[in-house]
Length: 318
Image (cartoon, rainbow, N blue to C red):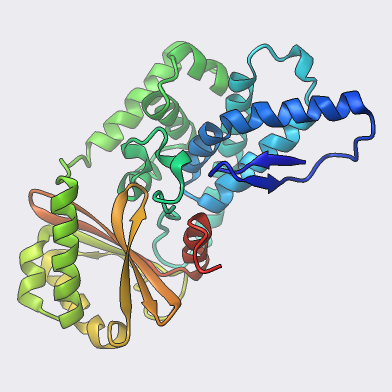
């Protein structure tokens, strides 16, 4: 069975069974058309819920398989039905992911998506798709996260959220309120996109040259550097906090990482980032968060699996 992928291109999806009846085949074609029309939203919900391109793809595929098995003649609102199915599947994955991440080596960072090549992520773009915000969302319970995303990213009414999460409207409001409070506790007004890129360019120059003073001028006093490597060599296994400690680490890291490396600008989750390569081999992906106080968060994605997922999301390197 063929249904459109996130970029609108045909993609082969596994069918439940071989269909020989023309009427049933026509029904599946109709099902694929309906599913394809709402697939961008389904992927957007799953990705914001899980912070993983790979897991979101799996959830959406599972939703498609369930949609094939559903008696669609009794579904009055296919979009609502599929959004509910996707959210509940993502909740199940989120619950199990928490247990899996207890054995993760070092900080866990969200799996980035190339939003220049993925219009469906940007179709309903909001702060909840930015990597720094996805990282904050990890502090929420899966149910709080679902309620917040459905409300803030997709504009669902509280009655709809309550139905999807199988709770009351009052509790749905409380879930969204608690989520907002958690996120507001760490809220900083971000710089504009042009300043963001200028800071990243200046940071790259300072990091590549090992310029300690320049790094300290760029970093906020309480900056935190996170490195996701899941045990990869040269990946820091704990967050590094504070301007002097982060700058000193970057200077010490410079001769082992930057010589022979080249950089390429990318659009990672709606913001500019840097893909770091050795020849044609990707080494890492760097993104940052910045406010009026300077660069206050660095995310170094060095996990080969997550970098590969980013490249697949952009259909890069084959």
